[in-house]
Image (cartoon, rainbow, N blue to C red; front, side, top):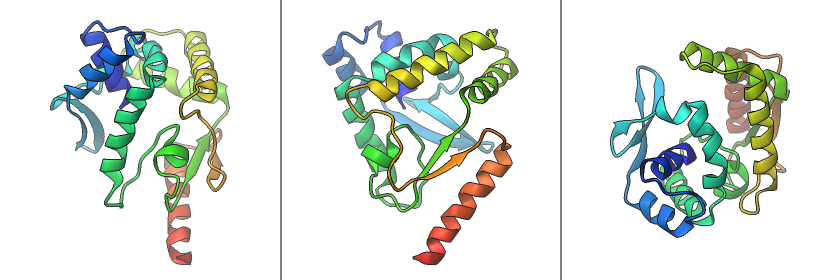
Length: 189
């Protein structure tokens, strides 16, 4: 969602410093998601922008946009609306602490920064994006620091979240662990 808001910033040539103008621009657009061929796709005004929001150039601009209180408020409202009926899985750096602090199951996924950077580097290469591994690592570390220290909705683990270190796990193993933990919760309640 914040990547889509950043794309709006770029499309309208509105710098993050122009907070009020950017918030108004985001309000003019529809942000939604849809499944296509098993993949979650990001839609901006019903146009698939999934690939555009995953470029390194856009990724490097997300931090300042997601720190804007008005943008966070809009995205939080949209996330709550998406989850108001329950039965959803949402991911994000403040979902379990700010957006849905009362969520039934909270899972905090973690991995060594080097492994996270390796995964991101591989993903970008598979999409044909030319990047340097160390640039990806540095960008990741900078984003973590920025998100942990932002004044609004900083990145932190929810006290009641299950922490899963995915460093040595495959995607399938991570999914299986998450499903297992959710099933255990449901059995207890």
